Amino acid sequence: MELTDKDLQSIQEVRNLLKEAEKAQEVLSTFSQCQIDKIVKAMTDAAVANSEKLAKMACEETGFGKWQDKVIKNLFGSQGIYEGIKNQKTIGILAENKQEKTLDIGVPVGVIAGIVPSTNPTSTVFYKSLIAIKAGSCIVFSPHPSAKNCIKEAVEVVARAAEAAGCPKGAISTITIPTMEATQELMKHPITRLILATGGPGMVKSAYSSGTPAIGVGAGNGPAFIDKSADVKMAVKRILDSKTFDNGTICASEQSIMVEKCMEEKVVAELKAQGGYFLDEEENKQLARFILRPNGTMNPQIVGKSVEHIAKLAGLTKVPSTARVLIGREKNVGHQYPYSREKLAPILAFYVEENVDAVLKKAQEILKLEGRGHTFCMHANDEELVKRFALNMPASRILINTLGSLGGVGGTTNLFPAMTLGCGAVGGSSSSNNIGPIDLINIKRVAYGTKELETLRQEAGMSCNSVGYANACSESALVDEIVKRIMKQLI
Image 1 (tube, helix red, strand yellow):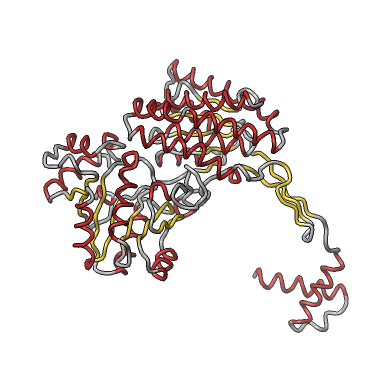
Image 2: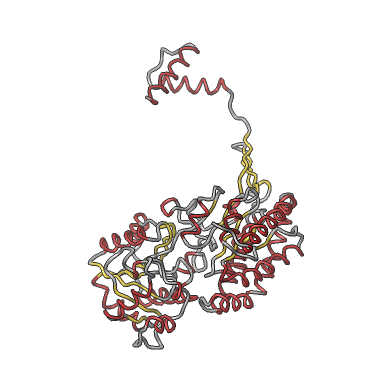
């Protein structure tokens, strides 16, 4: 592949930023918990003060979502995150167990690469900057090209505040010439110690294959089950509030509604009463053709757009202005069935199954298609049923009677507040956590000796005697017997 002047300039910019970050890291690594916490508080205050301005910038530049909702996301990504991390110990001695004679010491991982998506650009910058600095590490951002200006401004806001509070210059920075070559250089460069990846499956896969340790997330495709024990009116309210929040751009937002046959009529009536528009058969097919591109990927024209905008683009002329969400009935699950896939827009699939067993099976099928390890929502007041679904669902977050979008990130639940949601091994992720500062530090452990070799030999002899090795009395015989046992187990 031939590199252009822009590519070369962007690669050189990355190298320069990483060198500055490396120098800043040397200084930051000497800071105390008190110094780090002072910087984090200053960054939070600056982010909060600029939340509305940056929300409007993000909405105008990307064309995604609603600026009013992006204000909430910015506040959550700053003040909300701060409240969750402010009392965490991340620097120096984290824990001391005098009884066990151990010490845990927090060690910064070093320079972090922060990948930023276009769907949640400024709030992601706030969040990743805060958890990186709280963990004692510097961060260099790679912005999505379609959101580079608002991302740059967000980075400058927190960087200025951090430096004013004593943070070394260069600890928080961003690429200003975003190219794929620059992102690859950032992820693969030896100065980069960890990648914090948020973005599409291709970007996350690239991060994991870079050779640098990475924390990434998979696609969200969470089903929402409304059980007959649920408060249906509240369940529908929460689902529609969630799916319309910032026009569905949060990956934990619901992608489908599932009900038993006996609940269909009641749930459909409530959805219609609260602004859900059920597509007729022809409209269903028409929108399905528009949701996916010929190559099977999601049509970017629907991402973060309003119902009115999507209806106009897809040629749906009968959708009323009061419609909040477009709902397509679906029976099947598969890459060729658009409604069964992730849709970062106010579009929902609607599944009707014969019984709870069938609902459970279909929800598993949906998550295994797309969304493994991410999020599952359930509206129910039957605690035993909740436990059954939780034990059998391939999701890292099981959300009960709450909004998927804001519940998953910890906004309406007591989950750890985060905007990077790990999907665990089942989802191809290195962690199933809501990612925070503790995920960005290494822990050095100090352990005092508590036994001598003679003690181990004595314990081994007691173990042998307890299983019939009474004749192994001499030291050499005892060792021989232990070796034989080990070899036998290995064979």
